[in-house]
Amino acid sequence: YPLFGGLTRDDFRKSFAKMVDLVGKLHQAGVPIVAGTDGYGLELVRELELYQQAGLSNAEALQTATIIPARMTGMDDRAGSIAVGKTADIV
Image 1 (cartoon, rainbow, N blue to C red):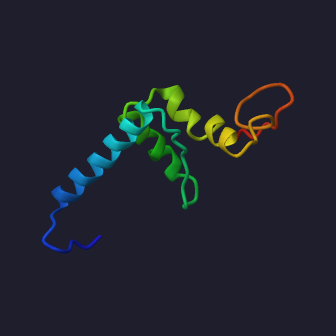
Image 2 (cartoon, rainbow, N blue to C red):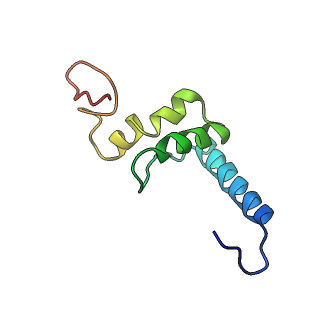
């Protein structure tokens, strides 16, 4: 992206690092973190990596894209985890 307002690339990097840190603090405070993207889905992998960088465990990062959104939408009885009777959507 073009730079503006006298900001440098380092300024943007520092701002991004603060956002990653904020996600970690929200998670520690018990705020549900839900992964999602407006892209084609490939961005989701990077998003989960950033959640790990923020301090979530591998399992917690994966849950942001599986069981947590299923719970938040009231679909955890049929989706969001692998269990007998649930819809399987594994590629």
